[in-house]
Length: 446
Image (cartoon, rainbow, N blue to C red; front, top):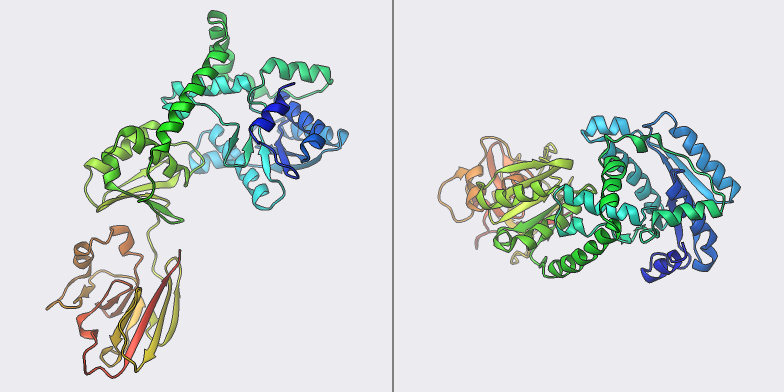
């Protein structure tokens, strides 16, 4: 444990006056980390608190929580405890119990950070865990990104102060300080992938290959150097990002696989804390190059991928539900997930600005309403003699299928007068004889 403090400082894991929440299950590693950080908090100029999450999986989990609470009282450490329902999450979201427990756990951590109760979360992963993670990722088919293992710090929130500390040093620290801990009975359940690797595979490898953990970690360091260089070559300047989705130009998928694979991993990370598997990356790449426009595929964690003309759109995309209808009048209409449409009467003729339409007010039929598109809608756009189906108009304008349900229209019956922020019908155009105008401004939510 002598090098832990140096490791923290070298990697800038803890800054002065930060509140560090230590994820503590009561097991050997987390008790060691909690006790150690509490012992050096004055030197690091930080506050240390314990965070215990009972996942609700094991019969003895409540007793483990009480052990952690008693430990904190004994050592004068402030603590938080939470009860989750990993089994329920697993069933409802069709996740493995491991994935569900992780989701519950990290949901608690994120809430604590968002509320300002902690600045960072310290995790008790150590050197042997790192070696196991690297090997497990390789077995699961990971590329360089997985082979490089865990980072000392992730997202500027999650820190791993013990990542360079072998299990033997942790055991020695516990003995030296007479620290008790609890044993998780599920650690011997080899139906869990990591337990199988830890209890069966790693002992066999250690017996046959001297220094196997050290060699795996050294291999990971080389992988990280290579991966960091390749990742530095990725150009994200042409991506279009919103809170709900990211649009990736189709041309990106003709670049080297090493680049597009990493770009996709970055995009997926925006919508899920869980890792997307290599097979899904390959699926998206093939989908982009071979599928028809308008096609869509579903990936785990409710991520959808759509092909929309010159883009592949990735994210948590939902079909837009109608918001009813609003009669046209001066003033503003607020539309959820779209923005605001503001209509202003005027007698002064001006040229339309960006995100604005100007129409002849006297040509506007009575009963016009803002709504979303419906079956049977027709449109006669500016400059066109005759009408066409609104669906055909959207296709001609190359408006992605997903977005067609998100664009408000001004209509009388099935006749479309305005497609919001896109085009007006020819019958509403301003001429030299126009006396009254409506200036219609579109302010979209970001």
